[in-house]
Each structure stands twice: as C-alpha cells, then as structure tokens.
Image (cartoon, rainbow, N blue to C red):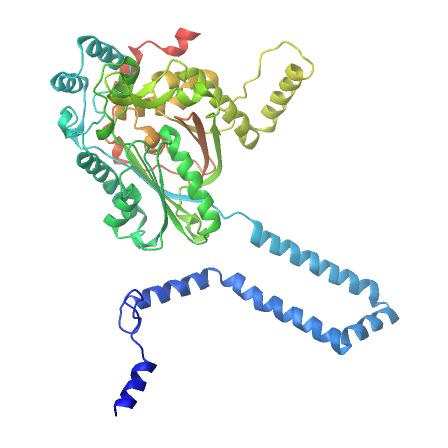
Length: 521
C-alpha cells in the first residue's frame, strides 16, 4: 500500500511555491483567456502560415511526381503557354500587392475622446491670494514681491487660475502633498474620460504618463494602474523631464505602440506638478515660473480599432518632433537648478525666445510639405532657390499656415510666446484667441495646455468634418513638438472646463495690456 501511495505521489508532484497551481488557483482562466485573445488578434497571420506551407508542399509534391513537368510540357505543345505565364504572373503580382497592403499599411490612430481637469473653487488663485500667500511665506524680499506683482499684472492671467491650497505654507511642500495633487487632478480626469467613452480600466492596453518635475517611486504610471486596477500586462511608460512640449511626445510614443500592438486602447495622461516645485527664492529668472505656471491635467484615449472610427473625434495625421539639445544655449535656456541660497527652481534665460523661434522654424519647415497646399509649397520652393542657389537678396518667404490648418492649439507658455508665434506665422487673431483664453482662464498648465485649447475650440467654435487641427508645444531641452489631427465628424462638444467663461471679460482685460505684436512691429 505504501509503495502504491508513493508512486501516486511521484506521478502528481507538488509544484514549487513560485509556480502557480493552475489546478486549484482561480487565476488560471484569466491567463488562458489572455492567451486565446492574443491568438485571435493574430488570427490572419496564423491562418496564412499553414496555407502557405500547404501550397509549398503541394508544389513540391507535384514536382517530385512529375505532374508539374507534364503541365509545362502540355502548355508548350498548345497555345496556353503565354496565357498560362501571364495568368501566373498576374496572380503573383496581385498576391504581392494584397499582402503588402495588409502587412505594410499603418494602422489608423484615432482620438476617441479627451478630458481636461476642472479645478474646484477653493483652488482659484486671483492676484490677491497669490500676493498674500507669498507674503505670508516670509521667503521673498520686497524687490521680489514687486517684481512678481509687475509680471502678474501684464501676464494675461485671469482671476480663476488654480494653485494647490497649501502652497503658500513652505512646510507643506513635501512628497505627500505632491502625490495628493497628482491624485486629485489625474484620478478625476481619468475617471471622467473612462465614463465618457465607456471603456473599462482593464480594456486599456497602453498607458503613457508625462510629468516633468515630479517622478516618485513607484512611478506615476504605477499610481494610476493601482488606483484603477488595470491589467497586469499593460504596457506603461513614464516620461519625465520632457517639459511643456511633452504631450505631443507622449502622443507620438502611443502612436508608435499602436502600430506594433493591434486592437488596443492607449491612455495618455499629461500633467505637471506644482506642489513640489514651487520656488521660494529671490532669483528673478527663477521667479517667472511661479507667476505663470498653474495646475492642470488632461487625459486622452487613443485607439487603433477601425470600428472606433464612427465614435472617435479625430484621426492623427502627423507628429513632428524637433530637438535642439545639441546647442548649449538651447539646452540651458530652461534649466532646473539651485540658486545661490540652494533653493531649487527652474531658470528661464534671456535666450529663450530666440531659441523658441529657431525651434519653431525647423519644426515648421519639416511639417510644411506634409500639410501646405501645393501653391504655397511652390512659392516657398522658388523663394528658397532664389536665396540659396541664385544668391538673390530677398526676404525668406513664410508660408501662409492659415491655408494649412483650420484650428491651431498653441502652448500657453506666456503672452509673449503666443504673440511671437502669431507674428512669425502670420496667423489670424481669431486663430490664436483660444490660446489666449486658456492662458487667461487656466494659466500655463504646461503640457496639458494644448488640450484646454482644443476643449475651448470644441466648446465655442465646434468642428467640421475634415478640419485640420495643429497642436504646437514648446519645452525644455529645447524642443518644439507638433501633432496634426483631422476631425472625423461635425459638431460641438460640451466641456465643463469652460462653463460660465466670459469671453467679453477676457477680451476687455487683454485690451488693456500692451500688445507685444504691435510693439515689435
């Protein structure tokens, strides 16, 4: 009896503790289902392999049995030779064309929908609260306070930009409150986009989070995955230090992933953390971010599922990335560092606008052939030949980008930045007003600002089918990154972020400020 028991025990050994016991554990079916899902995803490829193998084996069998030689000899003795060769050649070419189309064609990338964070009223930061909070912190000199007041007065920011409630208390600048800020902003925004689209957290296959200055361990991706209980095989990326232009970078990364992995949803989150990066020093070049940067966040749901075309808002056409990091001036024009008193902050140098202009020129030159009408491209090409080849002294021709795009979403880096882009690209005032509105209502929300602009456009202007939207971002490094979208449907979309916004009040306020464009002209 003992020997029989021993044999049974040997035939059913207990697996090591680190190997799941699929006979008892309820987790087994989940992984089995996931495996079958993967097989179904690649069903066409898996189906073609045995078909190709069968055809190859059949041809070899015909050759070895002599039937293939007999077929060719019959064709030679009749008038079938030319027709047979022509038929076979046509079939081969047709098969090659079809296979090339199936396997080489890029998958579409749709923007199903997006959401932007709406701050609660107790986060509003009018100029009075900003000044009183800065005074109460007892960290700033009288000269620094005067400087910040002047910057705020002409910044183009309104009374409802948002900052974390405890920011004026230096002791509250810690990791715990920085985490709370991210959770407050992004968890609410992600929940909103999931509710709007009806997508479940476990349906998300790709997650990309960008946040430049706050990068805890576990990562921000891990925080989102943990909170929403996303699946264990999700492909996640946490982008840090990429600056205000990080959202197009994140979109481009998601696009590349969607080309590799079929039938997937990609969730892209853009955010910047204010709590742990508030500057409590007196270096003027490092005080500017305090005056301009405010809290914001955006969540975008992308899909490469062709059936999502009918409910998606946009299709991604192009992404262009420009990086001037090889230049010392460009690399250091936006730089996180310590001041003389060891206070950490972000320094903005005087070369910033010149560097931004150069980055914009390079990016636009790359993007132009993809989006400009033929007429504009011909004029630009002739002008280039005259200047570079024939050495004719004439001004460089700047193409009319009003003809290339129907809507423009400019990063709200500051009023001077928006004015400079309007001047350089000769954009109509109505094309840049949405960006001015975002700067007025929300301030510089870093990488998420271009999504607040798009929300403004959808809320007040609406879209026509086929409209082309250009998102343009600038950031440290120095980088200029753009994304071009095509509207798939006609209509307006309501965004709570723009409820009760008074456009006339904004226009009246901006009219009292010095116009940078007119000043330079």
